[in-house]
Image (cartoon, rainbow, N blue to C red; front, side, top):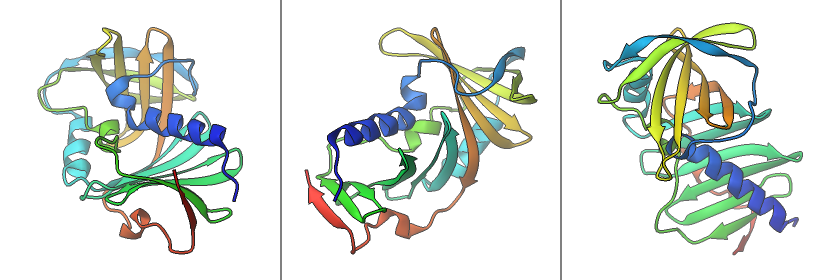
Length: 215
C-alpha cells in the first residue's frame, strides 16, 4: 500500500481550497484565459446564481464536475451532509469521503485508504456555492474566457482579515460555466463541466474491498 505523507498534505490543501472557495477567497495567478470584463450595472433582485442555488442546492443534494488548474474534479453532497470528492493527483486516482463514520482518503489504483474519526466541524460542498442569498447586491456584465463572452454576476465579500475579494459566476444562458475568484493578487478560474441535481448514494459508502489504515 503506497501512503506518502506529502501526498496526503497536498490532497488536504487542494480539497480545503476548493470547498472553501466562496467562503475564504483565493489568490494567485489566473488558471484560465480571460480578458477582464465589462460591467453592465448592479442589481439586488434575484439573478441566475440565486435561481441556481434555490433550484439545485435547496435540498442539500447535488454533484458538481469541474476543472481547476488543468485538473478534473467531481464533488458531491447528499441530504444527510455526507460529501464525496474525486480527482487525479500525479497520475493517481484519489477519492475523499466524509460521512457519519468519519473521513476517508481512498486510492482506487491499489484499493488502499486512510481513515480518521469525525471532526467537530467539517467543510462541505455547500460552502462552495451557497454563499449567495436574496439580500445580496451584485453587479452584472460580460467577461471573455478562452475567446467566448459570458454574462456574469459578481458578488463582493470581505474576509475576516479585511481582504476584499469577489466571485464572478459566468453563465451561458442559465448554465453556470465558470467561477472566477478575484482578489488583489489576481484571479483564479474554475470551469464547471457538470451540475447534477441528484447523486448516486453509493458514492458516499466506502467499498468493502479496500485496505483501510486509521490515522
